[in-house]
Amino acid sequence: MYGKSVREKLEANNYKLTSQRAVVLDVMSANRGQHLSADEVFFIAKKEMPNIGIATVYRTLEKMAAMDVLHKTVFDQGKYRYELCDENSHHHHHIICLDCGAIFEVQEDLLHSLEQHLEEQGFKIVDHELKLYAYCPNCLKVEE
Amino acid sequence: MYGKSVREKLEANNYKLTSQRAVVLDVMSANRGQHLSADEVFFIAKKEMPNIGIATVYRTLEKMAAMDVLHKTVFDQGKYRYELCDENSHHHHHIICLDCGAIFEVQEDLLHSLEQHLEEQGFKIVDHELKLYAYCPNCLKVEE
DNA sequence: GTTGCTGCAAAGTATTTGCACCGAT
DNA sequence: ATCGGTGCAAATACTTTGCAGCAAC
Image 1 (cartoon, each protein chain N blue to C red):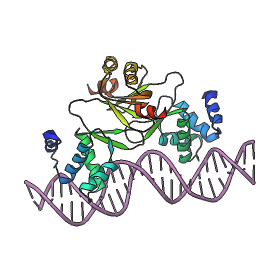
Image 2: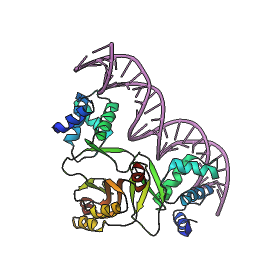
Image 3: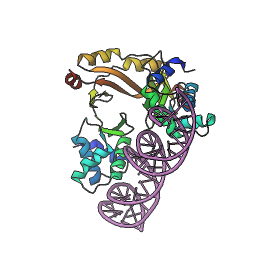
Image 4: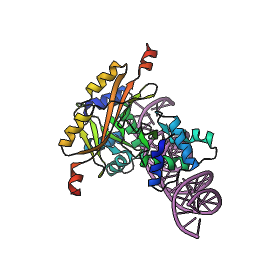
Protein backbone atom coordinates (compact mmCIF):
# COMPACT_ATOMS: atom_id res chain seq x y z
CA MET A 1 0.00 0.00 0.00
CA TYR A 2 1.18 3.45 -0.78
CA GLY A 3 -0.96 4.94 2.03
CA LYS A 4 -3.85 7.30 1.94
CA SER A 5 -1.70 10.38 1.42
CA VAL A 6 -1.12 9.48 -2.22
CA ARG A 7 -4.84 9.10 -2.80
CA GLU A 8 -5.40 12.38 -1.01
CA LYS A 9 -2.83 14.15 -3.14
CA LEU A 10 -4.47 12.75 -6.26
CA GLU A 11 -7.88 13.95 -5.16
CA ALA A 12 -6.53 17.36 -4.25
CA ASN A 13 -5.49 17.69 -7.89
CA ASN A 14 -8.58 16.15 -9.43
CA TYR A 15 -6.55 13.19 -10.59
CA LYS A 16 -7.91 9.66 -10.64
CA LEU A 17 -6.18 6.57 -9.38
CA THR A 18 -6.60 4.55 -12.56
CA SER A 19 -5.40 0.99 -12.86
CA GLN A 20 -2.41 2.18 -14.88
CA ARG A 21 -1.38 4.62 -12.20
CA ALA A 22 -1.83 1.95 -9.56
CA VAL A 23 0.46 -0.38 -11.50
CA VAL A 24 3.14 2.31 -11.78
CA LEU A 25 2.89 3.04 -8.07
CA ASP A 26 3.07 -0.67 -7.30
CA VAL A 27 6.24 -0.95 -9.37
CA MET A 28 7.78 1.96 -7.50
CA SER A 29 6.67 0.53 -4.21
CA ALA A 30 8.01 -2.92 -4.99
CA ASN A 31 11.35 -1.37 -5.90
CA ARG A 32 11.92 1.01 -3.04
CA GLY A 33 15.43 2.42 -3.02
CA GLN A 34 15.98 1.40 -6.65
CA HIS A 35 16.02 4.63 -8.72
CA LEU A 36 14.25 3.32 -11.80
CA SER A 37 14.23 4.99 -15.20
CA ALA A 38 10.97 5.43 -17.11
CA ASP A 39 12.08 2.61 -19.36
CA GLU A 40 12.58 0.24 -16.49
CA VAL A 41 9.25 1.13 -14.92
CA PHE A 42 7.60 0.55 -18.30
CA PHE A 43 9.27 -2.82 -18.68
CA ILE A 44 8.27 -4.00 -15.20
CA ALA A 45 4.76 -2.57 -15.49
CA LYS A 46 4.22 -4.46 -18.75
CA LYS A 47 4.42 -7.75 -16.88
CA GLU A 48 1.40 -6.73 -14.86
CA MET A 49 -0.40 -4.86 -17.63
CA PRO A 50 1.01 -5.83 -21.03
CA ASN A 51 -0.66 -3.12 -23.08
CA ILE A 52 0.24 -0.15 -20.91
CA GLY A 53 1.77 2.62 -23.01
CA ILE A 54 5.10 4.28 -22.36
CA ALA A 55 3.49 7.70 -22.62
CA THR A 56 1.22 6.80 -19.73
CA VAL A 57 4.22 5.76 -17.70
CA TYR A 58 5.98 9.07 -18.44
CA ARG A 59 2.83 11.05 -17.68
CA THR A 60 2.26 9.19 -14.43
CA LEU A 61 5.85 9.56 -13.26
CA GLU A 62 5.74 13.25 -14.11
CA LYS A 63 2.51 13.85 -12.20
CA MET A 64 3.71 11.87 -9.20
CA ALA A 65 6.95 13.83 -9.12
CA ALA A 66 5.02 17.11 -9.30
CA MET A 67 2.95 15.96 -6.32
CA ASP A 68 6.06 14.92 -4.35
CA VAL A 69 5.05 11.30 -4.35
CA LEU A 70 8.13 10.44 -6.37
CA HIS A 71 11.52 12.07 -6.47
CA LYS A 72 13.03 12.71 -9.89
CA THR A 73 16.79 12.87 -10.32
CA VAL A 74 19.46 12.70 -12.96
CA PHE A 75 22.49 10.59 -12.16
CA ASP A 76 24.62 10.99 -15.19
CA GLN A 77 23.49 9.74 -18.54
CA GLY A 78 21.01 12.51 -19.17
CA LYS A 79 18.18 10.19 -18.19
CA TYR A 80 15.75 10.70 -15.37
CA ARG A 81 15.42 8.27 -12.53
CA TYR A 82 12.58 8.06 -10.04
CA GLU A 83 12.17 6.77 -6.53
CA LEU A 84 9.36 6.77 -4.02
CA CYS A 85 9.68 9.68 -1.63
CA ASP A 86 10.34 8.54 1.87
CA GLU A 87 7.84 10.24 4.16
CA ASN A 88 10.11 10.06 7.18
CA SER A 89 13.58 10.93 6.05
CA HIS A 90 13.86 13.70 3.53
CA HIS A 91 17.23 14.78 2.26
CA HIS A 92 19.06 11.57 1.65
CA HIS A 93 22.11 11.55 -0.55
CA HIS A 94 23.66 9.19 -3.03
CA ILE A 95 26.94 7.47 -3.54
CA ILE A 96 27.44 6.38 -7.13
CA CYS A 97 30.00 3.65 -7.65
CA LEU A 98 32.25 4.56 -10.55
CA ASP A 99 32.95 0.90 -11.21
CA CYS A 100 29.71 -1.08 -10.99
CA GLY A 101 27.33 1.87 -11.11
CA ALA A 102 25.48 0.83 -7.96
CA ILE A 103 23.80 3.62 -6.06
CA PHE A 104 23.98 3.69 -2.29
CA GLU A 105 22.09 6.00 0.00
CA VAL A 106 23.44 8.09 2.79
CA GLN A 107 20.91 9.06 5.38
CA GLU A 108 22.92 11.38 7.53
CA ASP A 109 22.50 15.00 6.93
CA LEU A 110 25.65 16.89 7.68
CA LEU A 111 24.92 19.96 5.66
CA HIS A 112 23.14 22.08 8.21
CA SER A 113 26.15 24.21 8.99
CA LEU A 114 26.77 24.94 5.31
CA GLU A 115 23.13 25.86 4.76
CA GLN A 116 23.11 28.05 7.81
CA HIS A 117 26.10 29.91 6.50
CA LEU A 118 24.44 30.48 3.14
CA GLU A 119 21.20 31.66 4.69
CA GLU A 120 23.23 34.27 6.51
CA GLN A 121 24.33 35.44 3.05
CA GLY A 122 20.72 35.95 2.03
CA PHE A 123 19.76 32.71 0.30
CA LYS A 124 16.62 30.81 1.21
CA ILE A 125 17.67 27.16 0.91
CA VAL A 126 14.83 24.88 -0.11
CA ASP A 127 16.43 21.57 -0.89
CA HIS A 128 19.76 20.03 -1.61
CA GLU A 129 21.17 17.11 -3.41
CA LEU A 130 24.55 15.58 -2.85
CA LYS A 131 26.16 13.03 -5.08
CA LEU A 132 29.34 11.29 -4.07
CA TYR A 133 31.34 9.51 -6.73
CA ALA A 134 33.27 6.65 -5.24
CA TYR A 135 34.33 3.03 -5.46
CA CYS A 136 32.09 0.86 -3.35
CA PRO A 137 33.42 -1.73 -0.89
CA ASN A 138 32.38 -4.60 -3.19
CA CYS A 139 34.30 -3.34 -6.18
CA LEU A 140 37.35 -2.57 -4.09
CA LYS A 141 37.23 -6.14 -2.80
CA VAL A 142 37.11 -7.69 -6.29
CA GLU A 143 40.08 -5.71 -7.51
CA GLU A 144 42.39 -7.05 -4.83
CA MET B 1 44.63 32.50 -22.43
CA TYR B 2 43.86 29.00 -21.30
CA GLY B 3 47.48 28.44 -20.19
CA LYS B 4 50.02 25.94 -21.33
CA SER B 5 48.52 23.07 -19.36
CA VAL B 6 45.67 22.71 -21.86
CA ARG B 7 48.12 22.50 -24.73
CA GLU B 8 50.13 19.97 -22.75
CA LYS B 9 47.08 17.87 -22.09
CA LEU B 10 46.21 17.94 -25.77
CA GLU B 11 49.70 16.85 -26.74
CA ALA B 12 49.70 14.12 -24.14
CA ASN B 13 46.68 12.66 -25.96
CA ASN B 14 47.91 13.28 -29.50
CA TYR B 15 45.20 15.86 -30.02
CA LYS B 16 45.71 18.98 -32.05
CA LEU B 17 44.74 22.49 -31.08
CA THR B 18 42.81 23.25 -34.25
CA SER B 19 41.20 26.60 -34.85
CA GLN B 20 37.79 25.14 -34.03
CA ARG B 21 39.01 23.83 -30.69
CA ALA B 22 40.63 27.17 -29.97
CA VAL B 23 37.36 28.95 -30.65
CA VAL B 24 35.48 26.61 -28.30
CA LEU B 25 38.08 27.14 -25.59
CA ASP B 26 37.91 30.90 -26.12
CA VAL B 27 34.16 30.80 -25.69
CA MET B 28 34.51 28.84 -22.47
CA SER B 29 37.23 31.16 -21.30
CA ALA B 30 35.25 34.29 -22.11
CA ASN B 31 32.32 32.88 -20.13
CA ARG B 32 33.98 31.63 -16.99
CA GLY B 33 31.50 30.67 -14.33
CA GLN B 34 28.68 30.50 -16.85
CA HIS B 35 27.79 26.79 -17.27
CA LEU B 36 27.07 26.81 -20.99
CA SER B 37 25.18 24.13 -22.87
CA ALA B 38 26.56 22.73 -26.12
CA ASP B 39 23.93 24.76 -27.94
CA GLU B 40 25.02 27.99 -26.35
CA VAL B 41 28.67 27.30 -27.06
CA PHE B 42 27.76 26.54 -30.65
CA PHE B 43 25.78 29.75 -30.97
CA ILE B 44 28.54 31.93 -29.52
CA ALA B 45 31.27 30.13 -31.47
CA LYS B 46 29.40 30.75 -34.73
CA LYS B 47 29.96 34.48 -34.33
CA GLU B 48 33.68 33.89 -34.48
CA MET B 49 33.59 31.00 -36.97
CA PRO B 50 30.27 30.93 -38.82
CA ASN B 51 30.64 27.53 -40.43
CA ILE B 52 31.69 25.55 -37.38
CA GLY B 53 29.57 22.41 -37.01
CA ILE B 54 27.63 21.44 -33.91
CA ALA B 55 29.18 17.98 -34.01
CA THR B 56 32.61 19.54 -33.68
CA VAL B 57 31.43 21.50 -30.67
CA TYR B 58 30.08 18.36 -29.04
CA ARG B 59 33.24 16.43 -29.85
CA THR B 60 35.44 19.19 -28.49
CA LEU B 61 33.45 19.60 -25.30
CA GLU B 62 33.49 15.86 -24.79
CA LYS B 63 37.26 15.60 -25.27
CA MET B 64 37.93 18.58 -23.03
CA ALA B 65 35.76 17.10 -20.31
CA ALA B 66 37.59 13.78 -20.60
CA MET B 67 40.89 15.63 -20.16
CA ASP B 68 39.56 17.57 -17.15
CA VAL B 69 39.84 20.86 -18.93
CA LEU B 70 36.09 21.30 -18.71
CA HIS B 71 33.64 20.08 -16.14
CA LYS B 72 30.44 18.50 -17.40
CA THR B 73 27.30 18.61 -15.28
CA VAL B 74 23.57 18.17 -15.54
CA PHE B 75 21.46 20.71 -13.72
CA ASP B 76 17.98 19.52 -14.44
CA GLN B 77 16.65 19.55 -17.94
CA GLY B 78 18.52 16.47 -19.10
CA LYS B 79 20.97 18.67 -20.89
CA TYR B 80 24.67 18.88 -20.25
CA ARG B 81 26.38 22.06 -19.19
CA TYR B 82 30.07 22.78 -19.27
CA GLU B 83 32.40 25.10 -17.45
CA LEU B 84 36.12 25.64 -17.44
CA CYS B 85 37.78 23.73 -14.61
CA ASP B 86 39.31 26.02 -12.10
CA GLU B 87 42.91 24.91 -11.53
CA ASN B 88 43.04 26.24 -7.99
CA SER B 89 39.77 25.35 -6.35
CA HIS B 90 38.39 21.94 -7.09
CA HIS B 91 35.16 20.83 -5.55
CA HIS B 92 32.97 23.82 -5.79
CA HIS B 93 29.25 23.47 -5.42
CA HIS B 94 26.22 25.10 -6.91
CA ILE B 95 23.19 26.93 -5.68
CA ILE B 96 20.41 26.89 -8.26
CA CYS B 97 17.79 29.58 -7.81
CA LEU B 98 14.34 28.06 -8.13
CA ASP B 99 12.94 31.36 -9.28
CA CYS B 100 15.31 32.94 -11.81
CA GLY B 101 17.41 29.86 -12.53
CA ALA B 102 20.68 31.63 -11.81
CA ILE B 103 23.51 29.40 -10.70
CA PHE B 104 25.80 30.55 -7.90
CA GLU B 105 28.97 28.90 -6.78
CA VAL B 106 29.96 27.92 -3.28
CA GLN B 107 33.64 27.56 -2.74
CA GLU B 108 33.77 26.21 0.78
CA ASP B 109 34.16 22.55 1.20
CA LEU B 110 32.48 21.35 4.32
CA LEU B 111 32.11 17.76 3.33
CA HIS B 112 35.33 16.32 4.67
CA SER B 113 33.77 14.92 7.82
CA LEU B 114 31.04 13.17 5.84
CA GLU B 115 33.54 11.70 3.42
CA GLN B 116 35.77 10.58 6.24
CA HIS B 117 32.87 8.77 7.82
CA LEU B 118 32.05 6.98 4.56
CA GLU B 119 35.64 5.99 3.96
CA GLU B 120 35.55 4.30 7.36
CA GLN B 121 32.66 2.26 5.99
CA GLY B 122 34.79 1.03 3.12
CA PHE B 123 34.06 3.45 0.28
CA LYS B 124 36.79 5.18 -1.67
CA ILE B 125 35.39 8.64 -2.35
CA VAL B 126 36.66 10.14 -5.60
CA ASP B 127 34.54 13.23 -6.14
CA HIS B 128 31.38 14.84 -5.00
CA GLU B 129 28.82 17.21 -6.30
CA LEU B 130 26.43 19.22 -4.22
CA LYS B 131 23.47 21.10 -5.56
CA LEU B 132 21.50 23.42 -3.35
CA TYR B 133 18.07 24.50 -4.51
CA ALA B 134 17.20 27.88 -3.12
CA TYR B 135 15.83 31.34 -3.71
CA CYS B 136 18.61 33.80 -4.32
CA PRO B 137 18.88 37.16 -2.54
CA ASN B 138 17.84 39.02 -5.70
CA CYS B 139 14.62 37.11 -6.20
CA LEU B 140 13.74 37.38 -2.52
CA LYS B 141 14.24 41.12 -2.79
CA VAL B 142 11.92 41.49 -5.79
CA GLU B 143 9.12 39.56 -4.11
CA GLU B 144 8.90 41.97 -1.19
C1' DG C 1 49.79 8.80 -47.79
C1' DT C 2 48.49 8.14 -43.22
C1' DT C 3 46.11 9.98 -39.62
C1' DG C 4 43.35 13.01 -37.12
C1' DC C 5 39.71 16.63 -37.70
C1' DT C 6 35.78 18.65 -39.82
C1' DG C 7 30.93 19.51 -41.52
C1' DC C 8 26.96 17.47 -42.94
C1' DA C 9 23.30 14.49 -42.55
C1' DA C 10 21.45 10.47 -40.58
C1' DA C 11 20.73 7.80 -36.59
C1' DG C 12 20.07 7.17 -31.78
C1' DT C 13 18.03 8.14 -27.05
C1' DA C 14 14.94 10.05 -23.94
C1' DT C 15 10.91 12.49 -23.50
C1' DT C 16 6.72 15.07 -24.92
C1' DT C 17 2.65 15.93 -27.58
C1' DG C 18 -1.52 15.50 -30.86
C1' DC C 19 -5.28 12.88 -31.51
C1' DA C 20 -9.04 9.73 -31.63
C1' DC C 21 -11.16 6.70 -28.57
C1' DC C 22 -12.65 4.95 -23.97
C1' DG C 23 -14.78 5.06 -19.34
C1' DA C 24 -16.64 7.19 -15.33
C1' DT C 25 -19.41 10.68 -13.60
C1' DA D 1 -22.44 14.69 -22.83
C1' DT D 2 -18.40 16.04 -20.57
C1' DC D 3 -13.91 15.47 -19.17
C1' DG D 4 -9.88 13.28 -17.68
C1' DG D 5 -7.03 9.36 -19.05
C1' DT D 6 -5.12 6.14 -22.41
C1' DG D 7 -2.39 4.06 -26.37
C1' DC D 8 -0.40 4.91 -30.50
C1' DA D 9 2.43 7.29 -33.50
C1' DA D 10 4.58 11.45 -34.65
C1' DA D 11 7.31 15.09 -33.07
C1' DT D 12 10.84 17.16 -30.29
C1' DA D 13 15.26 17.85 -27.90
C1' DC D 14 19.81 16.61 -27.16
C1' DT D 15 23.64 13.96 -28.43
C1' DT D 16 26.31 10.61 -31.14
C1' DT D 17 27.95 8.48 -35.34
C1' DG D 18 29.09 7.33 -40.39
C1' DC D 19 31.25 9.16 -43.99
C1' DA D 20 33.63 11.72 -47.58
C1' DG D 21 36.71 15.40 -47.98
C1' DC D 22 40.51 18.38 -45.91
C1' DA D 23 44.83 19.61 -43.60
C1' DA D 24 49.15 18.65 -41.46
C1' DC D 25 53.07 16.12 -40.72
